[in-house]
Length: 602
Image (cartoon, rainbow, N blue to C red; front, side):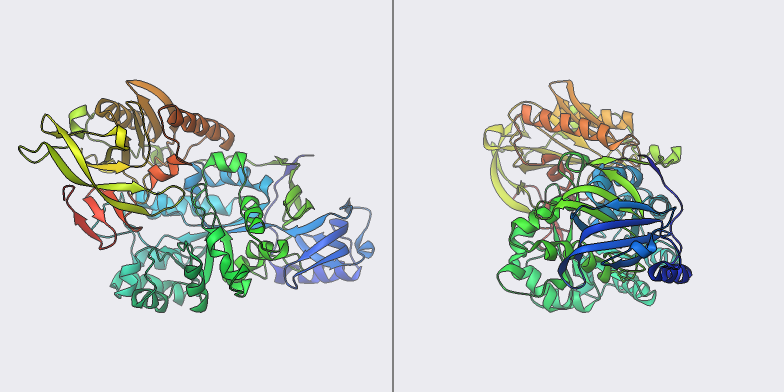
């Protein structure tokens, strides 16, 4: 069966008389699912022998017998005792991290049971500004599932410490709050600014509150003292940056929602869920999310179904884990009368699941229509066109050469003690290391034997030709090579990491030619390339194709010695100057513990 997407269902208040007529048997339903086990996230029960009736894309009846709603035109599906689960919600995520468009992201995650997403397009905002946000907003409106958009709050994420391709302010936030599909303010990453009553942050949060919408949080610090209390008092209502059980406990006690993320490289659920499983906190204020998932993870491992399974494996009851990925999320954004549960009036987004503990999904319905079956998309979803002008965002100013990546040592030095960015596997934070580095012919050399190579940030928005050079540890490259990426959270210049400066130049120039993406070069040979021409962040190809290219990139990285889990994601965050401890930006090396620029040499 192939489903063709129809228009979004009418609002509940417009549909109410029809829903009443179906529920009472005066009108036939469009679809009836019989003999299911109702996973009721409102009551926390699993209710056997349940029928559900759908009309106009909304649930009309949920109860023991829907035979009175069945007519000649009603489609009837026998669940055969399988579980009826609400469609899954991702409470915080960035589509751009999947390296595909909103539409292609939907195509990839629908077979995994995701029917609602809350996206923060601050990646494209850093490149294209408000125009980029509007492009993704409009595409989200046309999506076959519910894709709600948060207005990016911190562009740039750390004013004065980085230079993005565009900037947004409180006037832009006020305008966006009038758009039909803006659900709130995206993660407020400038947490020191909120605690210090920075005028821009105060104004943006105020505009969101005046609009009655949700303020997203991002408190990326282990300090739970006065700075944390100031941040909460400033208005953010959730936070996904916790990594410890005490982080989740502190947030929930202060009236925030603790968002626990399992992305492609972030494994923060296991520790924080102990706040529920060991400390006994009420699970209603805990939300599961992904934050960042690349296309390879989506295609091969899953999306929110993967997160729910992981949460169950940590000791949560299946119904509780499902609540954290459905009703809890919907309530947080004020949408529980629309999504997040199987109950009358809500959008008919649901899954037929044959095994609850492993969340084996047999069928996925959204707005009452079958979209996926047996792990395969069956709906016809057309591509969304992006204008040509968004595919010309990589401007280097001039071709780069090997000497652009030279790091000059202090005159006469035979060795130097340098600050080095230390990658932490499966976590967003880095370590601020100090390492003695060799000097050859007056230049700081890489040290592959001790797992230290070069990192460069290449300005790519204005064509200044600027290159900032530093050092990074943790990738494990054993061969001469370089990887370059125009995905460089959050300002999205170009990050180049390598052990060979000629390869670094070649990789950077390659991305300028193709309009952005990720490339790995070794001794002058291109080993893998993922083209991302839309703002240098997203592909215009299918998710499956992007995943294949990403898999080739992952294997190529292993071939040159990198054995980090999801090394590409770690690479892309090395310029994220809002997460401790040490990062690189177009302004230089940034100590995020103090939010100050520091010298490369100690």
